[in-house]
Length: 402
Image (tube, rainbow, N blue to C red; front, side, top):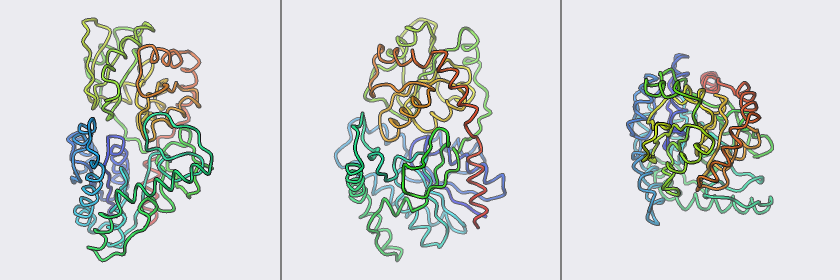
């Protein structure tokens, strides 16, 4: 069996597909992957023996431009990505039996699968992009006010109109070029009536939150056996477990001085700091020896050895920290991040920071919750319940449905 995996987005949209690719190959399937041409993603798929087929622009190049985007930047990107899918996926999908799509609104992927008469699966890593009467669309930064069911239905209808405004014209132009009829509702067409939810059942229960018939496989976690560097090992061994602060692919434009905020907040608790540079290129200007800056690192290994993890609330980082039993502080900005922050607090495995712009006082306060013995005990208990077989479940399901 041959399977094409397609995504466009940040590390959290890409790494799960590497996990699925690994499990598919272990079961004897041939795997092809179309993803953004960032060097780190090429290296990621090389770890599982798959060559990345470039799709669209570099994600990091787009993220770097978001500090001051032009009003029509979203329309340009939407059109570029749709064109890239129609231009890249047909050849990549040749001879394939299924196409699995995820990432930023993969409009065009289902159309290619339809034209080739192969199976199409839309996978998501959280439910908050799926229409629901229980919560509003998760597309806006900052706090969201409570809404009733009627308000939510209106907001989701407006969200569908927004998606159509961005994607309908380039999608239907591409469909016409390959002899397919136009689509009226792009969002529902892309999502389908039975999307897959690649998220852990403990961290992301979905029953009664959407009317769609989801298939929940569990999170797609790529095992990471890479050793920590000698520098990181030495720092960890030199004292009590530090606090890790990192925001992954989030550029943190809302908080320009986050490095200073992080070190002051951790010092307020007598803790040392490991600062993950991420796409924000975080830095510290301090001559003390109680901090360390790291780049690409095995978070699965590192999080097992820290006192707490402060992060942006991406699905992947939340799951990795939960699996490691590390208490969390989530500083959410956009999309699903506020919902993961709320879930971490609900489970008692950490704290949801109040807002997207931490001060050292607000971060120190949230760390007070995360560093408590009660939170550590709860995080340890929840870690034992987090599943690690989601990618294997998904791979088997794809192969068994031939």
